[in-house]
Amino acid sequence: MVDRPPRSRRSPGAAQQTGSVPTAALFGRVVNALTHEPVRRASVKIYNSKDQWDEITDGDGRFKFPPLKRAKYGFMAHRDGFTDRTYKVELSDFDDPKELPIELFPQGVITGKVVDGFGQPLQRAEIQALRANQVAGSEQTNDLGEYRLSGLDPGGYRIRATFQDGRESEFDPTPITTASATKPTELAVKAGAVISGIDFVLNPVRPVSLRGTIHTETGQPVDRASMSIAGPDGESSGREHVEAGKFEISDVSPGSYTISANTFDKTAPLFGSVKVEVHGEDVSGIDLTMHPSPKLEGRIQVEGGNIASLSSVHITFLPADHMLLRSMLFAKADDAGAFGAALNPGEYTLAVQSLPENFVVEKVTLDEAPVTNWKIKMDSSADPKKLVIVLAPKKQP
Image 1: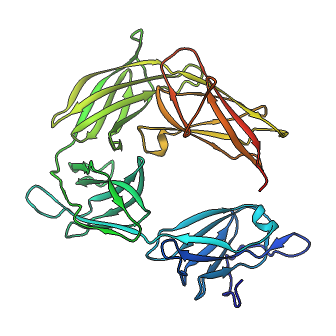
Image 2: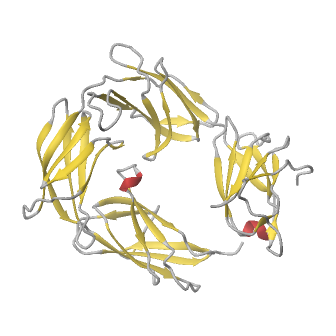
């Protein structure tokens, strides 16, 4: 316990925790995950959608919050030189209050420089650390072309550099030049380590436009569709336009891409994709044929318990070859646990969110085969695939 807890700072709108509402004072200790030494003057906070309570750890890394209403909260710990940690405060943390062990990892750092083909530094180049196709950290180069990516957790990263000069907005007529490159080798970042010398040579070029036709299998033009263009590291910043069965994507840098499209028809959605090689000139005559989207029929089952309604449960599908949020697909269960989705062929990472209190996902099957590592794969079959998510009560410790 903390002998003299630091003074609590509450957000102006925080409600008083008074009366007969059950409360508990949560407390804990923040330590270095490698040395287990206390982390002094770390900022810790507990929060919900309306209120926030802040504390600072003492000389022994300990903190204590005032009595809080028994509920679910978010928790975050921060200290310069370490990576942030977030946790969920569960209802069980109020039943038998114990010292919460919080471990912070010393941050990993990657440094380097970005220059053009003449050795001149490129200012405001965007540097990103990619981990499992997600952006884990980003930074811009300074006037010397130097960058310092900090706040990285231990693990493997690929580093990508992108540069754009010229047009400042969609309505700015100024020509632009762009360049991008990614280090193909994954860097192993250790806690507290500094990796230097990860340099890039970029040769900015004038981006080009891609043009083509988009139609159904019978040749019917598709007037409206959502389009995206993706390379090996995620979606391009190209601007898409579709009208009367023709499309144009502008501001595309050289590279290998996949152009994908989906219609907005929820009853009978269509999808299509085509691979394109982009060099230094505009590409015309691209043919994009749309096909019926494969369907997935889902059902949530409950074992060993009773739930009045399953309508709170949300299911998220993240395509393995995309990295932006707009490529995520969502489904919502009805009261009985039924849901559906139209998914393009490919691999997806599955996430089940907003579960009923005290329930967990027991198992998941796709066409009666067990789903491992939350990965499912859709093919172009016309027959709907059957996804079953089984919930069960949490096991008591």
